[in-house]
Image 1 (cartoon, each protein chain N blue to C red):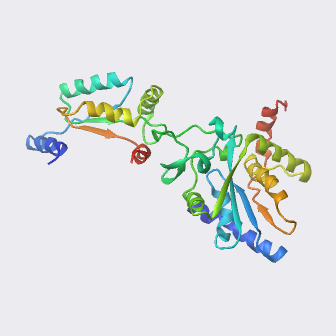
Image 2: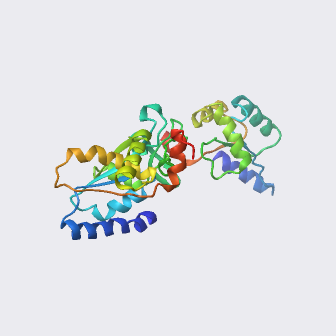
Image 3: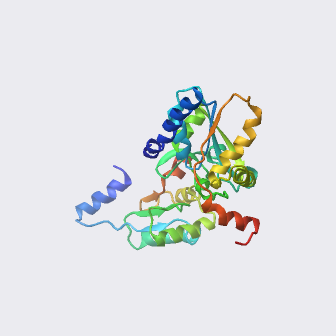
Length: 108
Length: 195
C-alpha cells in the first residue's frame, strides 16, 4: 500500500475526513514554501498539495494565478519544486505535486 | 480538425476554379500560419496532389530577437490548448511571450496537422518579418488597390520572394486570408502617421 493509501485507510478506520491543504510552490519564495509545508504538517495536514506555477494557469482562479505569477517572476520552475520536494524526503506527510501537463511532458 | 473541416471549403473551391481556369493544379500554394486554419483550409484538398505547400509564419522582429511567433520554425513539441504540436516554450515548459505585428499570427502554438505536414515533409514552413509583411501590405495596396490583412501580407511577402525564381508558366496560389481595413490603425501608428 502506498503512503497515500495508508493515510486514507487510517482516516477511514477512524471515520475521519482528510485535510489536504494546497499551496503554490515557490510563493512567495521557495524557502517560505518549505517552512509553510513543515508548519502545515505540524498543524495536522494529512496530505499536502504543492502547485507548480505555470505561465498559462487556465484552470486556476485569480488567487492562485496571482500567486503563480509571483513565484514565476522569482524563477520558480517544476525542476526547482521537485528539488525542494526531494529535500523533504521521508517527510511525515505525503506530498502531492500538482502541475499542468506541458512541463511534465517536457521533462519526460 | 473541426476548424480544418470547415476551412477546407477554401481549397475545394480553389481546386474547382483553377482547373476551370488553367486546366491544371497550381505548382505552389502559399498561406500564412498562425494557428494554421486558413492554411490548412487551402491545403487540405490538395494534400494528395503534386502541389508544393508553403506555410508562412511570423518572424516578428526576427527569430534571433526572440520577439516572434514562429512556432514551427523555432518551437519544440509540447501540449498547449489541448493538443500536442510545436509550441514556443522555455526549458521549463512555460509558454513564451510571442510577438507579431499581426494579431492573428501572434500565437505560440500551431495546429497539430501542420506539425505532421512539416515532419513528414509534405509542407514547407518559412518565415517573414514584420517589416517584410508591411512592405507586402503596401505593395498589394498600391498595385492592386486591395488592402490585405497583415496576416495575409506575410504570405504575400513570401510570394514576392518565390515568384522571381519560377518560370512564367508556373502557378502560385496565395490565400488572401483577410482584409486589411482592421489593420489601418496599427499600421498608421507604427509609421507615426496621425489619422
